[in-house]
Length: 441
Ligand SMILES: Cc1ncc(COP(=O)(O)O)c(C=O)c1O
Image (cartoon, rainbow, N blue to C red; front, side, top):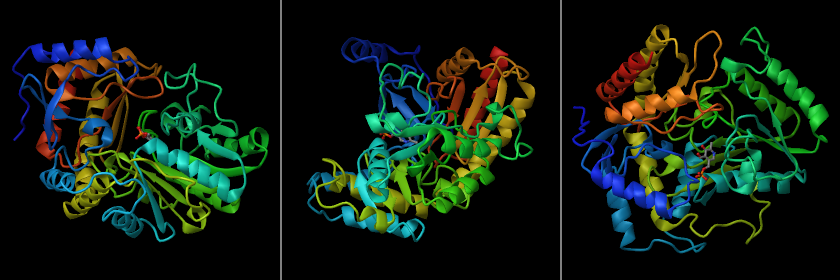
């Protein structure tokens, strides 16, 4: 049964009060979302403070992989709150078990796990480790990349003129960016596969001209999330992995959003047949509390001596216990498989819509990491950020909750429901988007 229920004008009277308080007392730095004030959430539904119920296509921001407030997770958190919550770097009953679990479910070369609390901490830690282990200073990341908002993580980001970086420079030195295979808008004006991976040829040229050849690591998201769910070709990823191996450069994969079933496999890199040396995890690792992890090879991890890296909340007992239970649920309930199945259904629906609507330029899906790229028309491909915003606003009025448009040009709708979503629920969401596209076309 689809549980959408809108009973007030939107936003409702109580939501308006909270929105006013937020406007008055909070900075405007956060992304500008539709005015849903969350009171309660379960599975793939969100109830606001006025009692309206929305179907959630956001999962927070790709966090609630097992669905909001999964009863078993809630019980673990509740029980642990009675015992101990935070004990800093002292060992607790769950942190080492979570580390062991992460080592067990990742490829054999990844044999140690460092538990932290945010995604940005993991990318920062990965770069620190890479520099310390290799004794080299340069790091290559990609145009369009997003690796977090702290200084190091932000400096890895791939759109300097974007709102998240403009005005915040100078950035950390030694970081170099290369073009990512954004095939819908190929920076070289070519098409895959006839391009013969021109972007990769350019990568080699860039290494020659823009680096000193003192490269510690290459870091990339498995698919670029913030840039608009851009999925690289498999052969590009494989070439990148081979290049790192051949040049003795560490490969860091940032799967803060691509892991724990989101892409239809437990880890996103499984789609590409590659293995990183360091793996950044977050978001869906707990589906709830702030937990993240850097999983890596002990030859790299072990260069750190006591006191070199830790974090106040990292590995706290409650978060570690929640993450352990979350992973158990993802595996037991076959949520990666469900993401693949429902993702396929949605991809089919949106591809049909793409045929019908001139403003739907591109549809990209990997499991339940989906994206719809809105354009003025298919020939010019001119980005249509205002149209994307209009879709989010109109969908909201019909009870479908989507995050504000993302993407290199702010014109991409992100489709990322919790992985427990059923096909009939996905269908209801697709129907709403279809209606909205018809209206605005
Ligand atoms: C790929 C990727 N890396 C890093 C981060 C940063 O994570 P956090 O906001 O938890 O610091 C994000 C967050 O959206 C992300 O998507």
